[in-house]
Image (tube, rainbow, N blue to C red; front, side, top):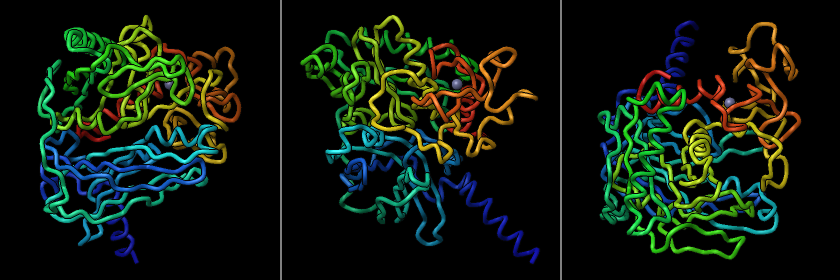
Length: 428
Ligand SMILES: [Zn+2]
């Protein structure tokens, strides 16, 4: 009985940690890029394969192959079919997932392009892309198939070689977090401005805690993309610009929500550069941006509050952080979070499973929920109002980068540091 228990325990630990350190057994240091369509509406979604590509670099971890954060609306899982062992996994979110919460998704069915990259397998593997069911928060398979790495149906061709400027190089990409800036709405004559903007954003990121203490863990590069026209789309004002990545304001009808649905062009732009995180700099003065976890972050380059917006959006895309504000205009049709379940983001809670969040960081004798008054209001607490909802959902501090663009609260900072450790192949 005891032996059985130990065996179960060992098996459990193995599954939790995956085959840490066994990258070479299963993978080459190249990427398998998987482009797929997500289609559906508020009620359902399905996934279909669009293309497979072999790409020349792998910038992700080589030890932390199994993602145990369980952030995001989706997971990409790779299994060894011989042992059924999970050998790689990573969570992510998509803009399509947000769209499914809008009023439009009540009456329309749409198809959106998405893309994930995994390390390139040495032999046949099973790909399983799963999506989180908001009714029970569990992941369900939406695209499952065998992938033979020698298949003639994998595109191994080159794409356009865009100029790559290394803004900061701190070491081998396997041990470092590779942050890539992409220029959107910069014409041929504006490429120097793009590099200057990317350098300015890099400097500001590493002046911001907790990133400031981890500058040596990041490689930063900038990929120069030439847009035919300067600026970006304002569809609500009838302004459309011919640009490299098809970005625009008025996402889901919200004037300051700046995104692009064109994931294929984004992944084409980074095909030959190691890439853990993408930030799209949009050549405009208008306030706005967006960020989806392990998808991309995007923001305007020249607004007065640009630097704070950049760090806020990077908090979403890099740290998996939720918005802590609750009174602003958003496009979501109903309550964005299901109050019957604990949300996956580390910096908000419905108190359904608060133990899994920042309970260990609460000062002793802090009431839960925490009243917004002295002596509690300037410490870590459980304050009502977050995630676009004023009731039933709680944030860890009254003020934070994820609410009103002041420094990150300690809970958000801890989540960011854990992600830095994960992506730089340390214990997290
Ligand atoms: Zn926070």
